[in-house]
Every structure is written in structure tokens, then in C-alpha cells.
Image (cartoon, rainbow, N blue to C red; front, side):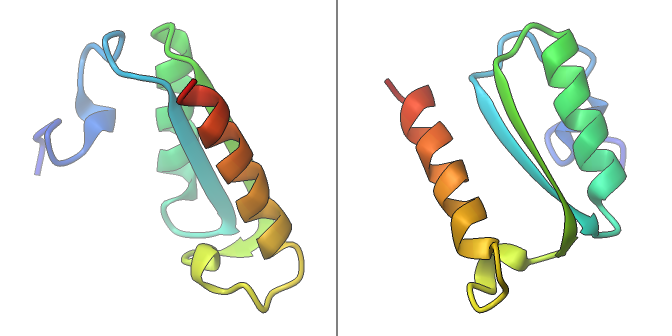
Length: 85
């Protein structure tokens, strides 16, 4: 599918989007697309908190038993609170 409403990475203009948090996992088949999306947002002038988690797998946010995941989620929440001010 080539619809930017399904995949915002396909949009030609991202400059009107709100601040974003993009968190990628190193062992995730979607990592490269997430990194590309974060970079495209930044290039469009959107404020982005881009968190790259090299040792994690897809869905890590639901795996609080993995060391460093709770700390990583705290960092996401801190940045989200800051962006909502």
C-alpha cells in the first residue's frame, strides 16, 4: 500500500505534524523505517525525540522484565510530558 495515511513515511510533507517520539529497537524488522521516519521528521523541522534501543526486540515496551526496559519507558514518558507542555 502506498498511502501516507497508512504509512506516514510516504507523505511528501511532514512539516505540519506535532512533536513526535520515535523509539526503535535494534532487533526489529521495522527499525530502519522508524529511523528513516524520525530523520524525515527532523528534516521537516518537526521536534523529535528519537530513541534508538540497540539491544531490544520489537514489542519491548510490553516486556518490563527485560533489564533497562523500565528505564527506557521512563525516558519516553519524561520526553512525552515535556512535549505536552
